[in-house]
Length: 182
Image 1 (cartoon, rainbow, N blue to C red):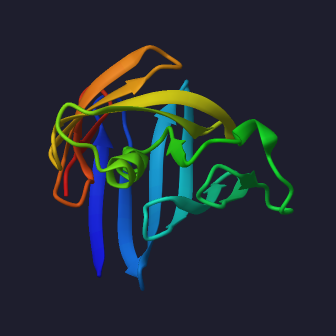
Image 2 (cartoon, rainbow, N blue to C red):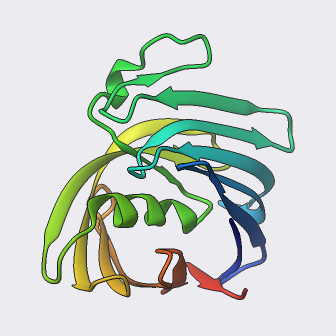
């Protein structure tokens, strides 16, 4: 099974093409993104390997300028770098949030399975693109309508957006940031 999605930014230039594939019971998300952020144009390829319970197991990011980041997670809050050394500052992070894509919102939406009105505070590994830095941040998700609408809160930057998603949990509309075109 493979699902393709494409997004464009609400402002500026750019585009993303993502393919979400089922690999046995697990999932693999692979995408290319071109964009412009903080007066810097960028191109990036990312691959996220996801366990059946929608926990992240591996994130590989490669920018077109040659910089790369490769991290591994055990699904219970322990992260390792490319040399398999623990990254203690990411302890407790289950999900990853790549700043250049709305796809990573799918991970906690699918993993948490929130009921209507339920809110969950989470800590995620936030990967800033094109800076290619990774740090823990606090976020929250509230289910407005199961499998359809969620309130996302980026508590670390005091940002909120009501996300609409398709039946697979892929973002269709992320007001002020991204809009799905395919």
